[in-house]
Image (cartoon, rainbow, N blue to C red; front, side, top):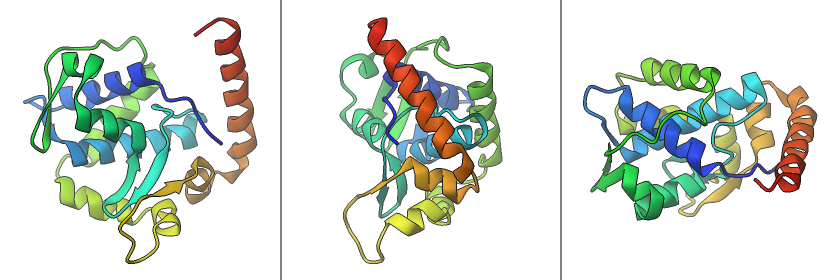
Length: 181
């Protein structure tokens, strides 16, 4: 199962997480962990991911691959809205919420509130507990390994959603192709 990465929705989701703090600034590793947890939970509860990003297992836990690359590069459209200062990401301008449903905003807020007292290293430990990371990251490895979204659903006891999610993603891809999105 492979999703299409939704860059605009990902940027808006990051902004939503940053807005949850009194100072719209956060360690980028912590930010990536919060977004991943929200993404995996949205997939399990609504059969739709937030980002559509590919996930890899890395030494410090699961990572949304394209999102990680975009945050590190801090170029193009992202640089208009976000600024990376060493290990922190800051919100410069609001990219809006047009790509975020009420359910996505609620999930981002809920995840942010749940982990509000955890720093980036606590979040690493938290994501090391996830079965999909444990399954896909061999002990002693120092490289990245793909995590299938199927493994994410299975880890949350939602294997029965796999066929439905695949069907919905194929239909959505066909719609986008027909209407040039």
